[in-house]
Image 1: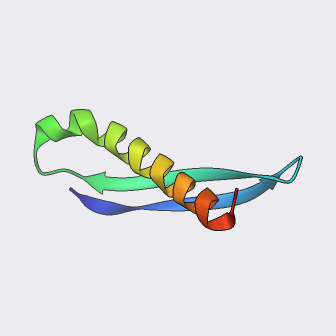
Image 2: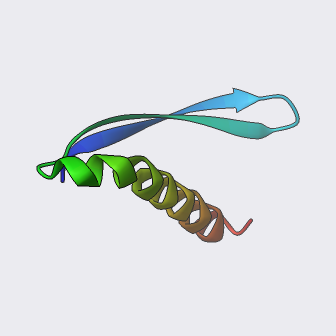
Length: 57
């Protein structure tokens, strides 16, 4: 798998933040296409958790 993703942070009411992820990924094995969406979602959730931990939330 190779590619990249971008997270765009936007403020929302109640001092919150909305993140919009955009991915561009290619997979060499067609069977892996079935799982790449789940994998990216998991990585994004880990990223958000790590960010919250770093910010002390």
